[in-house]
Image (cartoon, rainbow, N blue to C red):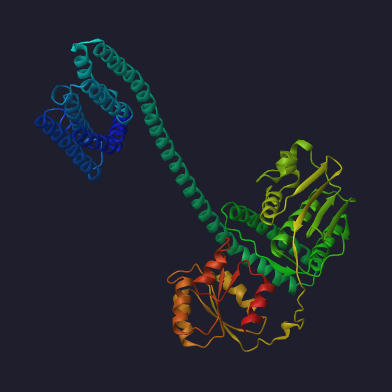
Amino acid sequence: MQNIQIKQKQIEYLYTNLTSGISAIFILSLMLFILFDGLVDTQNLTIWTALSISIVVLRGLLFLWYKKHPLTSGNVQAYYLLFFLGLFASSLVLGSSVFFIFPKEIEYQVLLLLVLGGISAGAAVTTSSRIEMFNVYLLMTLMPFVYAFATGQGEVNATLSVFALLYVIILLVISRKISITVNKNITLALENEALVEQLQGKVEEATNLNEAKTRFLSTMSHEIRTPMNAIIGFIKILQKMEDDPTKNKYLSTIDNSSNLLLNVLNDILDINKIESGKLDIELMAFNPKEEFEFLFDLYKTSCHEKGIHLINSIGNLPLSVESDKLRLKQIMTNLLSNALKFTPSGKNIELIVAYNKEACSLHIEVRDEGIGIKQENISKVVEEFSQADGSTARKYGGTGLGLAIVSKLLALLGAKLEIESEYGKGSRFYFYLPVKEVEAKIENTVEQKHIKLEGKKILVAEDNKTNQMLVGILLEERSLSVVMADDGQKAHEKFNEEAFDMVLMDINMPNMNGIEAMQAIKADDDSVPIVALTANAVSGDKEKYLKLGFDDYLSKPIDDDLLELLLQKYL
C-alpha cells in the first residue's frame, strides 16, 4: 500500500513540475528557430521546430487532463506511461537536433549544446522523483552531441566531446543525489500525513470522550439534584417547624451532610466547566469589606464549634471594586473550608485582606496552624483529585478538588495561588487579585420582602411528585395560589384554561418537555413570565434557557432566597 502511495506522490511531483519544463522547451524552440534561420536547412529547421512545439502542446494537454482527472491508485500506472512517452518524445526531438539543425559554425554548435545542457540541468530537478526518466531524457538529449563532437575533426571537437561527456556524467551523479533527497521528502511527507491522520483521529476521539463526559456530568447533575432538591427543601421546612433542640441538631446534621454532597457535585462540575472553557468570568462592582466580613462571620460559628479561634485581619478596603464576586466567594469558601478541615482544636486561623492602591490589587490570605504540608507535596495539592498523601484523604476525607478549583479560578481572574507551609505547624495560602476600583453605587435599601404576594397565582409544571409537594409548600407558605401540571402538555392546557401571574417550568418532562411547553405558551400569551426550574445546572444552561425564551432561571436544589427574589421580581 505504501509503495503505491509513494509512486502516486512521485508522479504528482512530475506533473506538478511539467508546466515549467514544457514552457522552457517552447521558448527555446522558438529562439532557436529565429537564431538558426539561414544558418541551417530551412525545411529541417521548420520540421524540427514544429515537432518540438507539437510535443509541447500534447504534453500541455496531458497536464490539463491530469488536472481534471487526479491521480488514483487505479490510474497511476497509466499516467506514468503517458508522462514517460511525452518525455521520451521530447528528448528524442531535442537530441535529433544534432542531425537535422546542427550548424557548421563551431560557436553555434557550442551554443546549441549549452542551451540543451541547461534544459537537461533543469530536468534533473523537475524529473528527480523518478530517476530512470531523467536518465533516459539526459542520454537521449546530450549523448548525440558527444557522438557528433567525437566524430568531428580537430582538437576543439575532441575537447567539446570530452566536455559533453563529463557534463553528462556530472548530471547523472547530481541527479541521483537530488532524487534521493526528493524521494526521502516524499516518504517523510507520507509519514507525516499518516501521523496527522492519527493525531486527528486521537483529537476526534478525545473530543467525543469529552463530550460524552460532559453529557454524563450533565445527566448526573440532573439525577442527583432532583432528589437533593426534595431532601434539602424538606429539611429546611422541618427546621422551621421543629422546636426540639435535639431534633433540630439532627436535622442540621442532615442538612450539612446534604449540602456537603451538593458541594462535591458542584466541585466536579466546576472542574469540567473550567477544562472545557465554558466557565465565564462575570465582572461586577461590590463592596469588598462587606463580602469578606460576611465570610468571616459565616465561618466564625463553624470555627467556634470546633474550638478554633478565627482571627479577623481585614484591613481598610475601597468602598467598591470590580471583579467576579461569586467566583471570589467560591475561592474564599474553599480556602476557609480547607483551613477549618485541617486545623485542630485550640489552634488559630487568620483571614487577612489588604488593598494595595498602587498595584490596584487585593492581598488575600488564609493562614492556619493546621497539619501543614510536606515540601515535596505542595505542588500536588493543586492537582485535580489529589491530596498531599493517601493518609490525608483517609483521615480528613474530601475529593481533592478544592485547591485545584481555586488555582484554576484564580488563573481566570489573573492571579496565582501561592502556598507556603511547614509540616506540622501550619500553612499560608495567599494571592494578589487585580481589581478595578470603581465608584460605589447607592442602592435602594427598602426591604422588598414586604411586597404582598397574596392572591397571586402560580402554575408549576413538574413531573416529580416529591418536588411538586416541596414547591407547593414553598409557594403556599407565601400565601400564593398554586396549580400543578404533571408535564408540559398539561401545563399548556391549564394555562389556556386559567389566568396565571407566573409559570415555574421544569425542563425534563414526558409528553411535552419544558422548552416546548414554554414556546407553546409564549405563542399564546407572551406577557406571563416563565422561569426555568430545573436540575440542569451545568455551565451554560442558564444562558441557553434564557436564549431559548425563558424569562429567568432557577436551579435545583431550590435556594429559598433566590426563589424569593424571583417572586419579588415578577410578582
